[in-house]
Amino acid sequence: MKNTKYVFVTGGVTSSLGKGIIAASLAKLLQERGYSVTIQKLDPYINIDPGTLNPYEHGECYVTDDGAETDLDLGHYERFLNIPTSQANNVTTGRIYQSVIDKERKGEFLGKTVQVIPHITDEIKHRVQILGNTGEFDIVITEIGGTVGDIESLPYVESVRQLLWELGHENAIVIHLTLVPYLAAAGELKTKPTQHSVKMLMQSGVSPDILVCRTEHEISDSIKSKLALFCNVKKEDVIQSIDAETIYDVPNLMLEENLDLVVLKKLQLPQDKQPELKVWNEFLTKFKNPKHTIEIGLIGKYVELKDAYKSISEAFIHSGAQNEVQVNVNWIHSEDLTVENVPNKLKKLNGILVAPGFGERGIEGKIAAVKYARENNIPFLGICLGMQMAVIEFSRNVLGIKDANSSEMDKQTANPVIDLMEEQKSVINYGGTMRLGAWDCQLKENSKIKSIYKKDIISERHRHRYEFNSTYLEQIEKAGMIATGKNPKTDLVEVVEIPSHPWFIGVQYHPEYKSTVLNPHPLFVDFVKASLEHSLN
Image 1 (cartoon, rainbow, N blue to C red):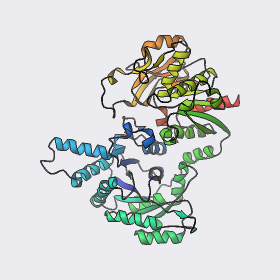
Image 2 (image 1 turned 45 degrees about the vertical axis):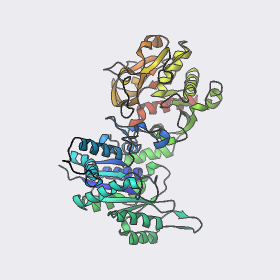
Image 3 (image 1 turned 90 degrees about the horizontal axis):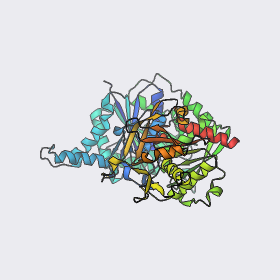
Image 4 (image 1 turned 30 degrees about the horizontal axis):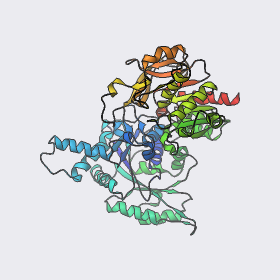
């Protein structure tokens, strides 16, 4: 059994400093040094998971192979480490409290008063150590959401304090990510916010072992010395994290700052193997030196908040680099599109992606975009709701079923070419009840989708309630839209394509969730390639 070491990442001064990227970058460097590493996120909100949250509220809801609806940071972890995460990698306050209350109802606490300490903190400590206890990992990095000083984060910080004491300081350390702001009027960087943040952390009984300082300007040796003095750390434990051109530069920046060396030294682990980041830097070189540029339209309902489509935009970065192409994503709100204005708004595009989503808002704009892509031979990729819109558009405008619709948008429609899955009809609770996680899909011989994947059976992640209504399959296929991917157990349609079109594919699943730096998703790679060919014609 491995003696698993733990690294806790806390944040101070302000949110959105990039704890997830720092955690993922450190994990990447440790992985390059030959250690098996995983990352988990502790989220302080009371929702059980982000599955019922509006994308405007929380950005994208990321889905794992085992069907966990999680924070989008888990997407960063997978994209950096190229290994899948699971239910155990994302823990929320809601899940912690639900578990404790369930135990109380069963009488597991022997009549004792249930309290934050020890019952809630014991549950948190148990969840933190689940991954370590598997014996799979040398190091578990745990990112604690929120900012030190938040009421919501207090039980997590207290749990960290207890774990540091229980595990011993050679087995568990704390990295505190903080902000060193630049005051233009004074012309200098200010350390006071960091000092206050560390003081607040120490008041909770936790002293940071390493300070990672987010900054817009180089941090001088004198400022590092000042931070070390006031924050009870050594000077070499003050790490600069300067603004980067892209998140994928951060592992190299952390390597320059010796973050991985400092961590290994504190955890008393060997530092034998040097991180090469060979394939990583090959990707970066291609990404930063594209030979061509293409314009892709992302037609969505939440485009004001680009984090709502985080995995899609990152998949374009991976697949663009693979093709040595700069992918310019045009964020187009589907509510702004009509049949009349679509030609003008979409005429400069080399490819059109109709994005996932829920509900009837902006649906007609998505359908108009599909029609434009189909009739003008523009490469088209429809994901989840985007695939369903392609089926509706084809049914209306090729088959002539003018009232074809999804029963999600119109419960009374006479022609629900997209319909609620049978097992979903009795569902009352919305949280965690969709078709979630990895499902198999059998690909049809001689189809475009099979030529892309080069496999008979694929496994992809799902997040939806509504499906292609197979009652209409025969007439849709006769008209020229073919079901080229089906679930082998349920026979549900997973993939549709139009063979007479240069590149027209709709998928019920979410390929973007599985695209990583080292393994760009083949569907995105081929879509970008087709869009490049369209741009050169």
